[in-house]
Length: 321
Length: 206
Picture 1: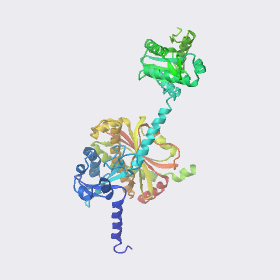
Picture 2: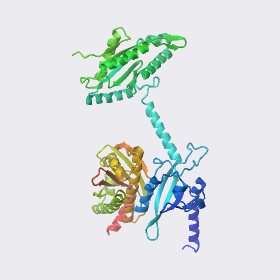
Picture 3: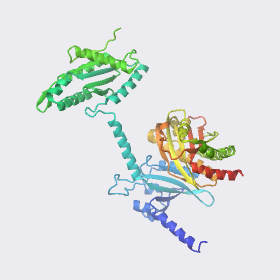
Picture 4: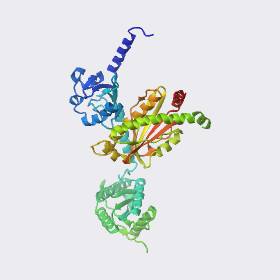
């Protein structure tokens, strides 16, 4: 049996807990006027209950978009159902400062909120309770994770030295483009090219100079290519470019422009002046290239032809028929 | 597995009872959805099954015809009964949903998230409440979590490392008359909850 007065004591405790709990509690009436306000709300907003009592929520907090909030709260009144908002929808309802103002990495507090119906004795809902949760740490960590994953995805696609696509990812794109070519009639050309006598450059000037040559070439490729072109480092000194919506003639113009730029270029590395050239093979997509590998082989053949015919040249693949 | 499945299987009476309870609850939920959207909601027959962890993926995959879905998940607990509600939306539903909800903003990822949250609050809340009312349990609803947007249905729930081997699954497919909106509500109860609900149900059956 509870002793007389114990019930009152428990109520008192409960009130104490509600006051000091680390969660924001706000009671609103049918006109969205603030009726109750616990100390979490008071401390974070700097407004004591008397400042806000019976004032419309949207008047005291102009940051809360009225239409948006009503859309979440009306079903609570009308349907007697609880509704929820998460920080991904809006980072916060009340613009409070981060509860860790020194070491926290966000200036504002991220909030989840829940709106709950409060039934009157007659069963109607004339008041709602707005509960505010501080989820700053969860939100910041989640954002970090998303960024890290994005960065990892980027790293897994990019070649370190040249910052062009790495072979694995380029091949994926190439396969996808091959599929697209089968479906559509728009032309697409594949250019494979490599640095002439790259071994000799490495032997004469050292591997660091070789790397610098590759880096320089990659930056020329980036300058010459359009945004839609898919440029990759295929292997050591071999590069591959997919020219979307480009036939063999236009691809030849592109490649010749690239080849001439490279040939007229001087790379200065530790007092060495290095000049180099590239040879290129072009293959425009044709129905005969049933598989990506056949298309690739065609451009490799054209590249070998350019190599065998004196280097610093562009050759377009021509089918034998 | 065999012996275990035996202990966890449902009798025909129990299954009927689950179906009946769900019918009432989802009727209430549909009524609220209808009032929220001002439409007529077609009521289906719920499917009640004990499923294994591997079958959950199949159950999810079976919920949708298209590959791209968005989903919200919400835990609930009360009187020793615990579970999760999953609401899976076919991504094609959003444009019609935006119209019904009178949503004025741009229907981008963020706009769709708003709609997803608004509808799931009402639908899940009503359904959980309806079931709780009938088995005389007042459930606490945890905060909802977005499982994914525009993702493949297989990626909604990460497989492996599940702490459970079987779950009681109630599948409800909602459709709305004359518009291209369909969504699936999956109510999943933990293994240890099933015994407790069965007790309640047996009590109701008597």
